[in-house]
Amino acid sequence: MPKPHLQCQYHILPHKNGCLELQLSGDWVIGNNLPSMNDVQTQLDQDPATTHIKISSTELGMWDSRLVSFILILTKSLNDKKIAFDISGLPSGTKSLLKLATAVPERTGVRKTRQQKSFLEILGSGAINTISETKAILSFIGEIWLSFFRFIQGKARFRYQDFWLVIQECGPNALPIVTLISLLIGLILAFIGAIQLQLFGADIYVANLVAIGMTREMGAMMTAIIMAGRTGAAFAAKLGTMQVNEEINALNTMGIAALDFLVLPRILALVLMMPLLTIYSNIIGILGGMWVAVTMLDISLIEYYLQTKQSITLVDCATGIIKSLVFGLLIAGIGCMSGLKCGRSSAAVGEATTTAVVRSIVSIVVADSIFTILFQSLGI
Image 1 (tube, rainbow, N blue to C red):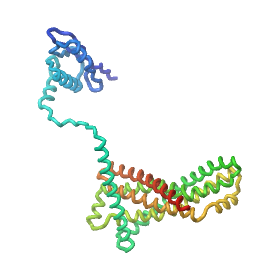
Image 2 (image 1 turned 180 degrees about the vertical axis):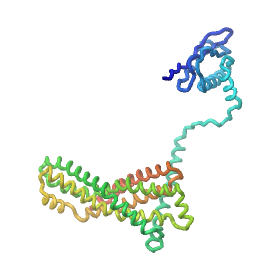
Image 3 (image 1 turned 90 degrees about the horizontal axis):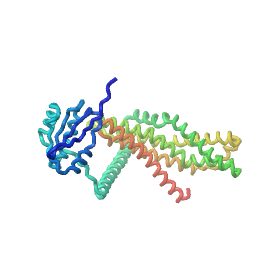
Image 4 (image 1 turned 45 degrees about the vertical axis):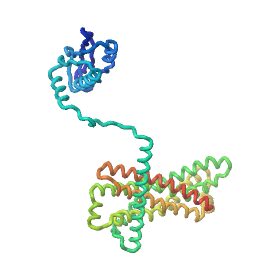
C-alpha cells in the first residue's frame, strides 16, 4: 500500500534586519492542495519594515511542479510589493526549473481575459442570430417549394425505391410505439374521466370524452410527438452523417440537387403517413377507453360503441387529420433542415439531432395552439 503524502505547508520564522525566513515542509506534489498565502500577507502587514524573504527547504519532502507553481505565484506577489525574494535555499532541481520557466518573459495579451458582455451587446447578438436563422428558414422553405413544383412537373430526381423505404420507416415500422402510446393515452383519458363522471352518474359519457379527445387533439398530437422523437431525429442523424462524410457535396458535384434526392422523399413520405397513423392512433385510443369503460364502469360494448358513434362527427375526425398533415410537414422539414445544416464532426450530428427533436416538439405545440384558436373562432 503506498504511503500517503504529507500535506505541503510552510512556517514563517522571524529573522533579523528586516528579513523573514519561509521554511517549507511536507510533500509538495500534485494531489496536495497549495497552502494559502494569507499567512505571508498577515506577517507583512504586521511587520511593514520587511524588505527581504528567504526560503529554507531543510524539512522539504518530495516535490514536483506544485512547488514550482507556488514559488512563481509568491515571486509575483512579492515583486508587486517590491520585496526581495531569496530562493538560494531551494533544491538545485527546483532552481533549474524556475530558471527555465522565467527564461522568456510572458508576452502581453497571451492570457485569456473574460470580458463581461454588456446588455446591448447580448441583445444585438441575439437579434442578429435571430435574423440570420429566420433567413435560413425562409430560404429552406422556398427551396422545398421549388423542389415540390419540380416533383409535380416530373423533373425532381430521386429514387422511388428510397421513397418506399422511407414510407416503410415512417409508417409500418412506427406502428408498435404508436400502438402502445395511443392505448395508454386512451386508458388515461377514460380512467380520469370515469372518476369524475361517476360522481354525477354520467358514466356513459366516458365514451364522449375519449372519442372527442382522441380525434380532435390527443391522437394527432401524441403521434406527432412520437414521430418527432423517432423519425425526425432519424432524418437529422442520417442527413447529418452524410454531411460529415461529404456525401451531400458529392451529390452536388454530380449535378444532383440534394433537396430533390434526399429531402423531398422524406417530407412526402411523412406527410402521407401521418394522417394514417393518426387515424390508427384514434382507433387504438378509443379501444383503450372502451376497455376501461367495460371493466370499471360495467358499460357494455354495444353501449360504448353507440355512444362513441353519436359523440363524434366527420368534422372532429377531419380536424385531427388536418393537424397531422401540418405536423408531418413540420417534423420532416425541421429534421431535414437540421441534418443539412450539420457541422463536420460527430458531435455536430448529435447537436443536430437534439435540435431537430426540440424544435419539432415546440413547433407541434405552437401549431396545435394556433389550430385550436382558429377552430374556436370558426366554430368548428
